[in-house]
Image (cartoon, rainbow, N blue to C red; front, side):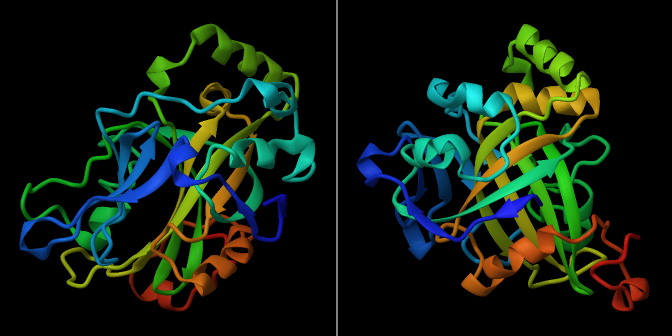
Length: 287
């Protein structure tokens, strides 16, 4: 983590916001509707279920086809930001978001592109370790999108933080020439900046279908700007900055959980250790 600012009010009335968090109407039988991330009036992602005991989720929907880049701040984001609010970037992207309280956090990440079902996939790896496979489908959860893994660390012996960067559209939609341009810039030492709106979901299985019944803190960054930069960084094995605007009222996390996030994000990276070894480990252990 480079810098964390104080929470601030951002956004415009819901009717004017290009991106919104919504809840579907209650279904028959009193069941709650889905949590959704909506872009330009169309559902773009289904999010973790309200109950907090269902598995962590960011599932791309068929109407997710829009990026939210802003040409007005493109030059500022081609380079490195020293502070989250440099160049008016926060205010510019805040005008795309619904009114609410947001925590600006400036991170430096080294993204790793993950294809669902393949090596490194959280949904068929760590999530299955805690929830097992879906009891109806007999399969792991499937996010319907490639995504980037950037960081993880221990919260305590029975909880772990997992961080993801989720593109609004898949990397295969990116312009190849622009990706190569960023690869060349990064090879010369440049560290460009991407921007995301983020949520923190804290989920824990109620029943132990897996081997590791731990609490999962899912820090999910939905990319507003930087699709080409993230792919370039993953391709070249280079770092990129990420300005996260954490939506404090939209995740499945308490105010106290969100307040802990900057300190957790400043810890050393560490993978989840299951079983007795995890009980004696420290959150700062490099493992």
